[in-house]
Image 1 (tube, rainbow, N blue to C red):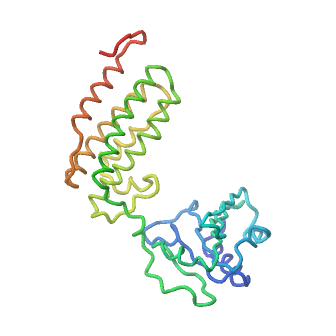
Image 2: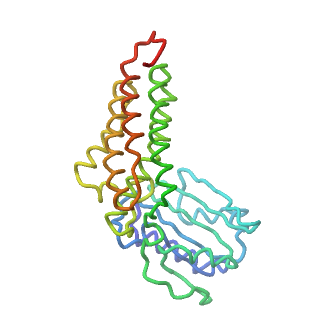
Length: 285
């Protein structure tokens, strides 16, 4: 695998020798002083160019960076403007996410707090503040958003219970692993944010949670992931409720909100009843 200095040299050499490319910015993890990069860290690069469509119509430029294993090319809809992103994994494992943007849309590049200027042929870039992840800090939730997350978490737990009883595995797993987990991830991020004066980046989908949670909470979070057996799903569902309750009460107190403990307790008892419900049952209570 190419080392970082080699990849960066290839990016800059191409940009310097291509008259269409007028400026280069790198953002993402490789611009973040708080992140330790590894062999899977990609290169998030922006080329500010004269004619973005040219790079779509003449894709031989990709060969400058090597042979790809796979590539994904997406248009970015910005009121008809031409911006494109090329997501590329090369045969040696290097990944480059290259955004091709018109120099007329330079303002969009200035919104990200994680950015470092690598090249500026025409002095069109303003002086950047030192790269930081301020744009990625966990935001304090409104009371409405907090209430909605709590309500939906407990409401959807009843769907998991009934789908287990009905032997509907895919439905149970989707509601638990996707819908309920989304609200749990929100709450964990809020909990961590509240402990760090709302100046913390917990990462996409909570990938940095382990760096911020006390060990006992992290271990509880691990237990909320289950396999395909209904017994495991029940165990992880009750563990999720236990963790959600602990974090919810703490976070609500910090925010000055009220955690819906009555909903929590009533639904938990309901779940226990459904868990013990015979398959030929005609009523729940």
